[in-house]
Image (cartoon, rainbow, N blue to C red; front, side, top):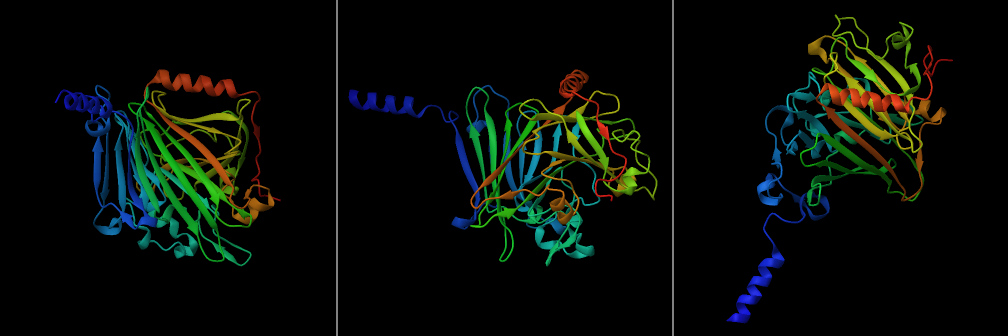
Length: 405
């Protein structure tokens, strides 16, 4: 009996409390024909005692054009956000306290891909479901629709309308515990692209930043071109008259004639919603970085008390676009901060300019991006100082579009 008690005590000590350690749950796996319709977990189940409370819920949406779309709602103790496995593992919305990271799109439902035809509206059907906060363009192409040889390219590619073939959630214990959401999206077709997105979206418990570690892999046995753009969209309360885009700009140019009309005066400042007839503007940027290529860019509220900070590496994301759509409020008042592997011109234009990278057979390309919410004037000022430290020269301002003759 004494030996049995000793063995049971040793087993209890070895197993530890139910909340200790790291845990993982696979939610979707096409190779195993696995789909989980609903599931939830919280810090009471997996978390460390005494830490911030967090939760994860997988649910399936119903009604309207969102019927059948699956979302993962996450609260990490400081930030709340929603991942959409059914839509290319994009992030639909996020909040930090009363700071909304996202925008008011006329598309209010998380539209299921089955109800979107990318070839509608002159190959601009991608807009029929556009309403997310962090939306990828790619993987084979992004930018304007165009015939590329014998291939018809649609607006911003396919990846945002492809359901994930794999999705999981992992809780990692440690000095700074975190949640990691892994998704695999296959952008493949016969006689076409054979590319895979493997995305790891992570948040530290109790922190106000979200991290994207993405890899694009060539699944084919021949070289393949690829493109990737992060469409990171903001509306109110960050966007408004007097808001400002702040970055260590090396070069800025208008994308088209509409963007060049004012000669780039105040190109990085916002004036508020405009009356009908307003034309959106896009500015094409190269940013300065440190010796390792790391850079930062910020959207700052008009009063300087709140903001959103992007951190990435110019060796992975060498180009950035600033989309200013200061249209009437109910027609999609939004700005997009868009780091990418190129600019949002059509792929033939980008290829001619040397901005379409290629992957060798089996090779992968890593893309890292952190988005940090700034909720006080001190945090905004600190971010501004860090950006100022990266500036080693005044920006080169080009007044003509890059694709102009």
